[in-house]
Length: 249
Ligand SMILES: C[S@@+](CC[C@H](N)C(=O)[O-])C[C@H]1O[C@@H](n2cnc3c(N)ncnc32)[C@H](O)[C@@H]1O
Image 1 (cartoon, helix red, strand yellow):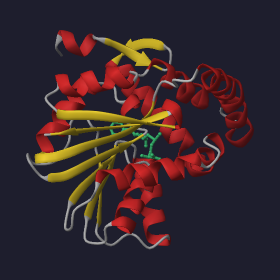
Image 2 (image 1 turned 180 degrees about the horizontal axis):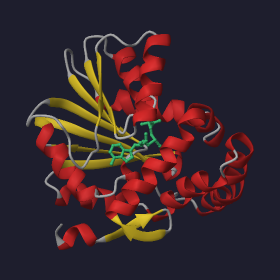
Image 3 (image 1 turned 90 degrees about the vertical axis):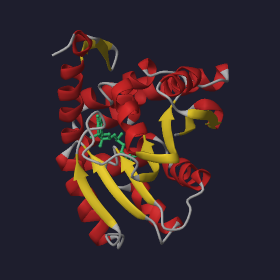
């Protein structure tokens, strides 16, 4: 283990070791997997569907692309990719086995299993060869990574030259009034709703706290550039409640 592995990182609003974050994040997503899709709709008032559709459309998928949907959860992004681009092939990858199992069930039930392969692996150590993917998508996963710099190195490694990394993530709201309303909603209501639906306020408290301690728009842009991505840009949706970052290999 190197000194770097002992670096403390935010897990919600607490600083812990990378290993503790990895274990904590695994436990949380194992707990929320059962109600994840329902909670997503309730917590974002259905808005996550629109944000994800815009996210995939902005990436401009070319024909016959090989795409990595990383931190894929239950497969929302994979489903939209195959809907938008029928000739694409998608590798759906997540470190949490329960989430991947749910994604497989959904892919069968909702008819998007063709052209998808499934992998259980973490972003920090991807089981893929160099220069494979035309595009990588990470939707609401990046802030949970226990070693963001290491994962960016891995993403650069597995992307083809000129391939793009596309990240959709909660960010910093620009408008002060909206920021206050959003703060009250996320900090008081979301943990209560989580408790009501899944008897689990703690996991939803983590999801809210992890938004607070994640890099803002400029911070994430800097991190991507520092890891070797070129032409990095971002676009705010809903005044920065979420943002889309794109960088090229
Ligand atoms: C909030 S969910 C997002 C799921 C889906 N992409 C979506 O937008 O609905 C975050 C996912 O990231 C996964 N995850 C967290 N850290 C990870 C890592 N280091 N490597 C791979 N997956 C990770 C979790 O298991 C979880 O399924």
